[in-house]
Length: 583
Image (tube, rainbow, N blue to C red; front, side, top):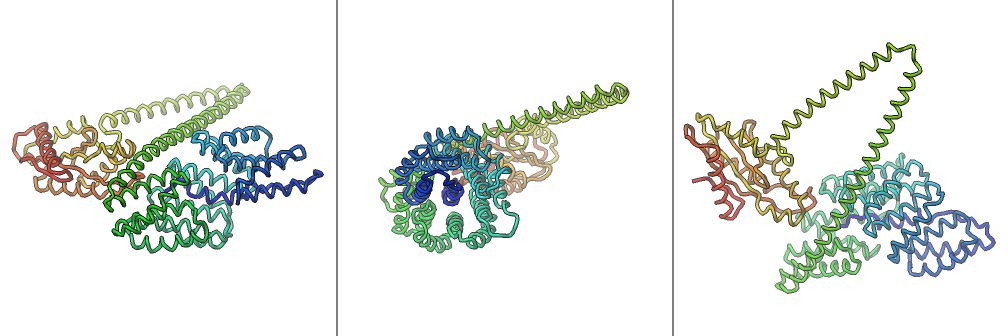
C-alpha cells in the first residue's frame, strides 16, 4: 500500500488552490495574458506536455506582469517542471521566489510546491523542515483550500515516514477546518485520511468504523472518487485478513467503477494485486495470473517501487503454483532487489525524520530557556528597584534556595531508584535482566521444602526476523513476547531475559506437569501474536525446555538452568515450536 495515497487524488483540489490567483488586466495586452494563463491551467490538468509552449509565450510578456501575475506565472512554471521531472530546477525556482516578500496564502502555496519537490528528490530532511515552516503559517492563512493543501502535504509526507500518530493529528485538524455541519472538502479529506492512516498502522477496526462517514460525507459534495478509494482499501483489507470471497465480491465491482472514473489510478494496481493473491489462494491460477500480470505491468510502467515489489512477489508465487519455476525465480529476484531498496529508502526517511524532530525539540528547548532567562532578568530588575524591601528579597532568596535544594534531593532520590531499577531490569523488555534473575532464582532454590521448576525458551529463527525486517521489528517482537508471557505468570513467578532472544521463567512450588502445561500455554500465546502493528506480517514461534527439582532434592540453580537448556536443545532438534522436559 503506497504511503502517499491521497496526495495524487488531492492534486486536483490543490490545482484549484494553487492556480486561483485573481488576474489584474491593467496592462494594455491584459486580455492576451489572461487567455494564456487560462490555457496553461487547462493544459496542466489535461495535457501537461503542451504547457511548455504557452509558458514560453507568457515569459515573453513578463515585463507587463504585476506582482500577482508574476507569482501566478512562477507557480504555473513550478507545476510544469514537476510534470517533466525537473525537480532540482523546480527547487531553484521556488527558492528564488520565496526570498521575496509574499503574503501568507501565497507563501504557503510555494512552500507546498517546495516540500513536494524535495520529496521527489529524496531529500526528506529538507521536505520536513519546509513542512514544519508551512504548518506554522496555518493560523495566518485565510484561504481554506490553502490550509487543507498544507495539511494534506504534511499528512502524506508523515505517512511515508510511518509517523502515523503525528499524521493522524493533522488529519483531525483537517477535519476540524470547518466548524459547521456543512459537507466541505476538508471534512471529506480529513475522514478519508483517518481511514487510510488506520489501515496503514494495522487498526482495521477503527478504519472500517469510519468508512460509512467517509462515503456519506464525500458523496454529498460530489467527491465520489474519494469514496471509491477508501472502499478499495477496505476491499484489500478483506483479502489481507483472509475473507477472500468477500474481498473478491467487493473488489470486482470497484474495478468497474475505476474503468469509468480513472482506470489509470494507482489504486487499481493495489486492488488487482490483492485480487491476484485472492484467486491464488482459491487455486484459480488463470484469474490470478490475469490480475497479477496487469498490476505488475502498471506498477512497472509508473515506476511505483513499493507496488512493484509487492506485485513481483505475488507473480513469483503464481508462477511457482503453475510449475513455471524459472519465471518464479526471476520474479523473486526482482522482489528481493526492490525490497533492499525499499528498506534503505525507509531507513533514510526515518533518519531524516528523527534529525528534524530532535532539531525542532532542541530549538523549542532553547526558546524556552531564553524565555526563562528573560523572566529571570525581569524579576531581578524589579528586585533591584525595591531597595526598601530587603527583608522580602532575603525571604524570597531563601525560599528559592530551599526549593532548589528540595528539588535536588527529590531528583537525587529519583535517580537512585532509577539506577537501582536499571541494574535489575532489562531495558528493552522491562523484565529481570540476567544478573538479577540468577540472583533471585538462586534465592528461590535455597528452600528445599517444595519443588521448583525452570522454563527456558528461545525464539525460533529470530535472526531471520532481524535480517528481513530490521532490528526495530526484532525489538518489537521481544517486547511483545515479554508482555504476553508476563500476563500468564503468577505473582511469585520469576521472569527474565538471559540475553538476545532467550528468556527464562522460575516457578517455585510447581510440579513438572503444571510447568509443562504453563510452558505450552506460553508457546501457544507466542504463536497467536498479531504482528501487523509492527508494520509487517510474519509468523512467530518459540522452543521450550523444562526442568524440575523435586522437593527435598539437592540441586543447584545452575544445574537447573543447564538441565532446562538440554531440554530446549531437544525441542530445537525435534523441529522447534514445542515443549520438551529434561529426562
